[in-house]
Length: 229
Image (cartoon, rainbow, N blue to C red; front, side, top):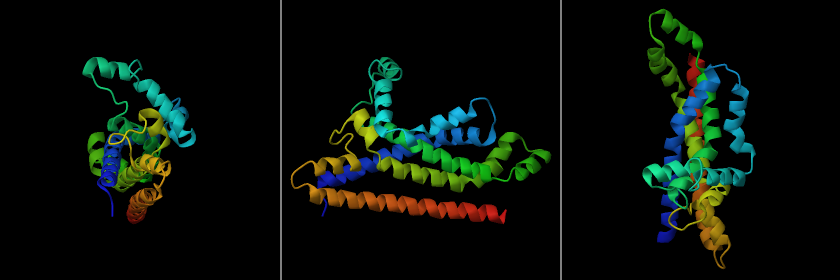
C-alpha cells in the first residue's frame, strides 16, 4: 500500500519528532519551572518570548533560525569553527525547527502541571527536614509527571506537523528534511500526486490524533491525581 519512499518519509518524521521532543523536554521544564515558581523583573517578557512562535508566522521563525545557524550566524559560526558541523539542509536542522515550534505547547502543559502541585505538601516536607532538592525529586517532580508527559506528547504532535519554519530554515530535501507536511506539499505540486498526498495525509492525521488522545488521557490523569490530593 505504501511505497518505500513513503515509509522513509514517515520514519524521518518520527525521527525528527522524537529528537525534537527529547531536546525540548529539559529546556521546556526549566522554563516552565521558572515561569511557575519564580518572580523577577522581565518575567512577562520571558513568557511572551517563549510563546512567540505560536503567534508569529512560522516563516519568520524559520528565517530567524536560518540567520542564527548560517555559516556566519551567531550559532552557526561557533558550530562550524569548533565542531565543523552545519545543520542547514539536514534532518538535524528540521528537528531544531520542530523543537522551537513545539516549545510553547510543551512549556504551557508543564507550567500548568507545576502550578497544580499543592505547595503545602512541599512546605510540610521542608518543615520535616527535607531539603529543597529532596522535596523536588520526591514530591514536585512525581506530581508533575503527568503534565510533563502531556507536554512531551503535544510537543511531538506539533513537531511532526511542522511545515513553515522547516521549509524556510532547511528547505525541502528528500531523505533529509522532507517530513510528512513537506512531502504532502511536494506531492500536491506533482501531476498525479494526489494519491500519495492522501496516503501521507492519512498517516499524519492518525499520528496527530493518537498524540492528542494520549495527551487528553494524561491531562485527565493529572486532574484526578490532584483531586485525590
